[in-house]
Image (tube, rainbow, N blue to C red; front, side, top):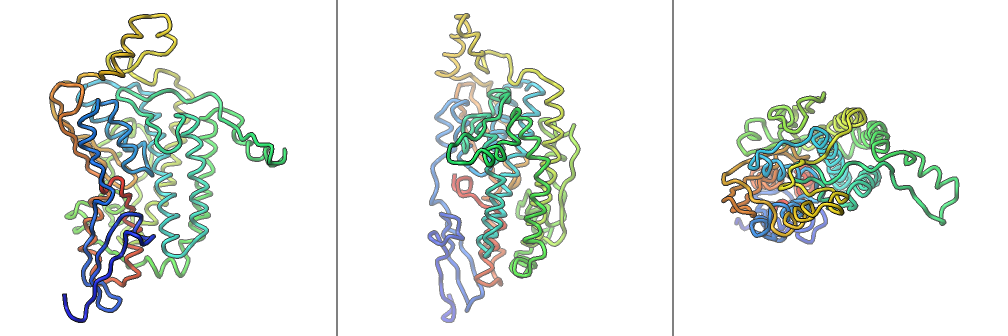
Length: 415
């Protein structure tokens, strides 16, 4: 290190380091000369833990990787297990998965735009994003019983169908008029609530864009910052909004369709500037496209009732009603949740278009009830590894915008 340069620890205590990133910066005045990200402070050995659990018991672990878009993680793991088992997933379950994947995308991007704006000095956007996430959490809670870690997807389908009734606010602390206002869109089923949410979302995105898109300070902090040329983005393994902001329309939902994405109509959001501002624009457009996909799923689900999980009792548990009268069903249930199910020997890689990029699961089975080896490909880990190449030449304050637009969650970076 030169005598004129000095070192600075950016994090882990710095709020813009998102919890557990230790970034050692070498500075020449306020200009970054070198950046050295130190990760691993949230390492929990997730992959190794999953190798000591049955396939079914491994599902809750991926919920806790990227805890801002849980369902997309579950989808990737379920696809890998289903490929090894070579089982078919009911079509209704596939539509439910797509719908919840897109709800996860909205939740992720609302958290991202709120926290990134907060890091760069804008408070109101965070409140707007939190409002939309709260509606998504209500949907998850009504459907799965949990708000943060739903554990809803299962090998062979989903845990259960959507409930017929959306829970309503019940509080004596509010006036009758305010209570009726809050429950106005909760009078019908969960599907009705999801439809109302998706129809309202584009208007809510407009509100956020009104605050940010032409905001002088926001543009000064993001335009021309963190530019990644398309060739470099491909070479360094970028996926998701990081790649699409560079003008490359790579989206697994289009290029390698899974579930029922090939039956649905949506556009891939791209920009060409490849800077922090364009990554913001891509994510906002993705929210609009997610709302469009959710409405298509709602219409299909209304018209097509049916099973939501495989009827193979070696893979999926029997209904509770069946267990009350059938001893064989009770045995299936007991064996499934104590021993799990054996998976044929082989190896597989399955990937989904996660809100942050390509989330992949590589798995080896030795024929037992637990995976022999599990390796996870998380997009934010790849993007954070670019920081050392992208940071030099930027000002110290620009590091906040850089880390913010990578959209990192250290549950999945450190694993």
